[in-house]
Length: 236
Image (cartoon, rainbow, N blue to C red; front, side, top):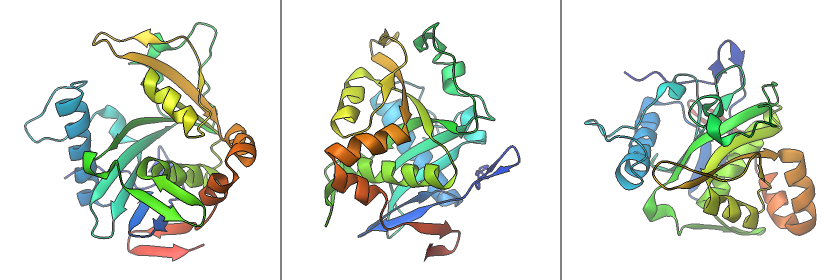
């Protein structure tokens, strides 16, 4: 049996989210079958495709951070996981404090206040990358839907700042999509040749920027919120 985080880490309780957009749902993952799918998707991306971690016999990519991670996924109405990301809260150790510490400049002190968290292990199934969600606010991809869920979770749980580590090319793409992540040090070339960057985003800055440049996207991020439960979804 897998150990699944259910909205409580080290005694702190968090409010879960669930949002339905057409035939897709973005929500916190609680059920073991959801978590297994997420770990399998991670294995496909990070072990088999990118070769960033070793392959495993059970084809599940799991590490110590999953012991206290808060899991997010985009699923279809049949329960298949199409996209995944996890969040680590500040009462726990960030990957930036260990594996990715070389990416943090000497002038930057990693913020460990309760309003801060770290994102990692973002992955999207290859067959879902071209899927679009169309509504009165525009057309959005699954990555944006995943971030909409994280945005609403952060709003419900008073998390303002997000850390992360990504490929420098993805960092530029994030800015094109309206996600105002800022570099906390210069790009760093990893042993496998990937040019990685450590980044940080302020959700308030995101709101101010997109109120001017992408008002429809910001309205969409704030629209159609549900509370998720183990047995279904109900409107707030």
